[in-house]
Image (cartoon, rainbow, N blue to C red):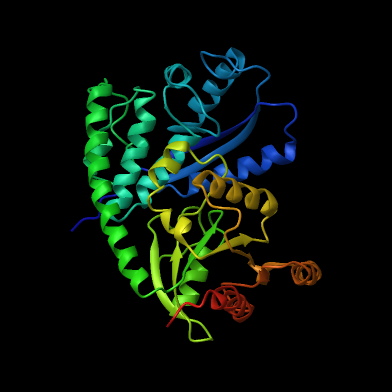
Length: 376
């Protein structure tokens, strides 16, 4: 059977420099992250990426007319199919820019939704992404929602059928949202039943959380012996996974891997995945996995804490902070980090890839959970 080759979408990434108080370092970091997000999409090739200064936002075209014209020439010359703008743009701005540039545009929310749609595997994951996408599109109503047929991965923004006349109004979208919520409610009831059955044999639940690509799935696989998908890319994990393991003390626990967080996570996604993240709320211990080798590790940690707060996670909840990827840290910095971690309570240094330091983390988990007197 002849293999069907899919057309590669040529992409240009724009990082708007909107505020004077934002430093070049922050803008450069944001550009690096959106490039990594874009690479997470299938069948795309980044042709170029630039930081674009914006003195004053144009309500019609986001950028000034001069910059719009300059970029139009560049995109035409480079034969760009898709432009990704790492910001939130209005439906009017998007429509006008697409007319001027004669190509498709994704803003930050649409980009993340597209990645989630491509990665969702389970029925629940697909439904949650569809609900988030519909909620996003309802506020815009500028595209046809052909992706709902689920004939391919993704939402149809990239490499899809193109701009078409809208065939559904808000009422049609609302009807579809009602259907999705009903299906998700059934799944939620099933999960609640499973949670109640687990409570009869009270094994403590440990939830892994962290910024996307921090190494949660690698750690999950190491602890459980599982062979779940784990790769060095953003949002490698979307659908939650749970496994039971025994600690050194013979205490049996249930460990849960969750979707990675990210800065400026679209509110539509937080709402859609709230049910999935209920495992975090119900957890007896949260393990916050950090990519300590990342240059923005402190900012990423703050973003994770913000998302946990938005989910309603109590400040009194037991949290163990894991400084992951120590294997790629320079020896001098590694020693310094280990000394800092020793002086702090609830911090462990390790490498989920090599396994070095994981035994110390398991001992810390035991210390937190054993006093709770869970029975085996």
